[in-house]
Amino acid sequence: MIIAIDGPAGSGKSSTAKAVAARLGITYLDTGAMYRAVTLKAQRLKIRYDDDTALGIIMAHTTIAFEGLPPDVRVIMDGDDVSADIRSDAVTKSVSDYCARDVVRKFLVEQQRQAAQGRSVVCEGRDIGTVVFPDADVKIFMVASVEERARRRQKDFAAMGVSKSVEELIKDIEARDHKDSTRANSPLTKAGGAIEMDTTGMTLEDQIMFIVNKVKT
Ligand code: DC
Image 1 (cartoon, rainbow, N blue to C red):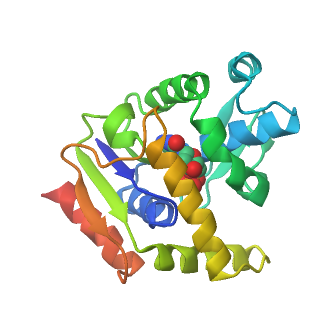
Image 2 (cartoon, rainbow, N blue to C red):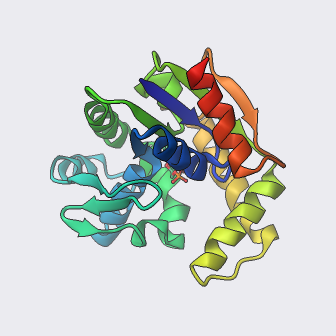
């Protein structure tokens, strides 16, 4: 069984997807973390987002794995735990540029399909229901108001000891939304057959039950 959850930054995908996976006892696949890991590696190697040749080389020499069970899933790149580094401001600001490249997407989409072979997964991202798993059993498209999403991001940052204003976060989120939904390659868009879920004002438990009930019916 495949549960595909797409939606913009801060719509509630990650916490909900992790919790649904834990409740159903199935694998959780965070595809955004994979795009973040590649961005981190490219930045460390000083490879620009538009250098497709160099990106192609690193893609062929990068391993990305997940360890642990949700909610505590660690992202391991080339053997190192990069779970914290992939959430840095520098990565968050550039990931939309790197993830728009064909060479990056082709490679990661293939890895995502392989990761789901022969097992049930909850997979979250931007193109899961449209491109990666168009035949998913359940497709959810999560949305929330930009103010609510900025408030959630503010809490996430506060948990990491970083203070950010809601205004600044709204600007960052709007910029990323724009890039993610207007790119030529697999833009963020609601998949055919996806159920739209507006999480503004919903509790995490409401969100989990909404999806678990769709699986059961
Ligand atoms: O969900 P996130 O914020 O960790 O995702 C990071 C970036 O990766 C986001 O700006 C869009 C991109 N992404 C994508 O293009 N396709 C996916 N399936 C998942 C994420």
